[in-house]
Amino acid sequence: MRHLMLLMIVATSMLVGCDDPTKVFEENRDIPNQIWNKDHMVEFSFDITDTTQFYDILVNLRHTTFYPNSNLWVMVYTTYPNDTVQQQRLQLTLADEKGQWFGDCTGDICNVQQYIQQRVFFNQVGTYKLAFEQIMRTDDLADVMAFGLRVEVAKAPKAKVQEPAKEQ
Image (cartoon, rainbow, N blue to C red; front, side, top):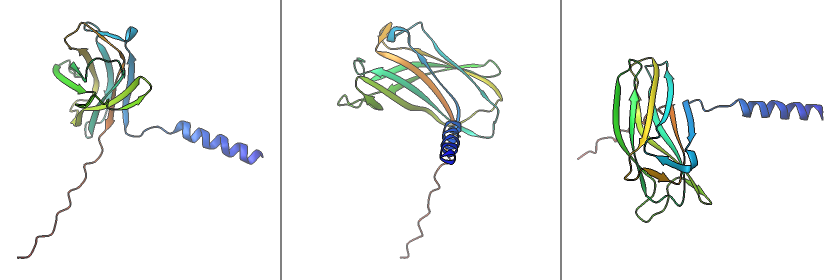
């Protein structure tokens, strides 16, 4: 019985201690009152220490099924460690043409994770800041519950298999 209890404690601690080895950063921010006002910037900061890696950048979005659009336009402001700022307009597609939500929907809540950049190369060590502003055609965007950012080490691209030349 003692051995079984010890084994269970060790197994539980191993599971709790396991973390996603590709994850560099991940945070989600609740949107106040589930209404994303155009003046409310959602901001994240993360550190890059390895400039030899490629990274993937993803956004996490939690919305209700009452969200009135099939997409979400955001302006992304990226501040580099040397204080250079770059902005980019970005569309997140949340539903298909038939209105079926993408992501994992349970009840009236959907969680969507989408790549916004893949195999990005950060050429500066330091703190990067990403700020997101909703730029839809309404000042108060209802039914947006949370917005998040994930940065992970990019997966190695699959090698292309060269087909042997056909004899003629």
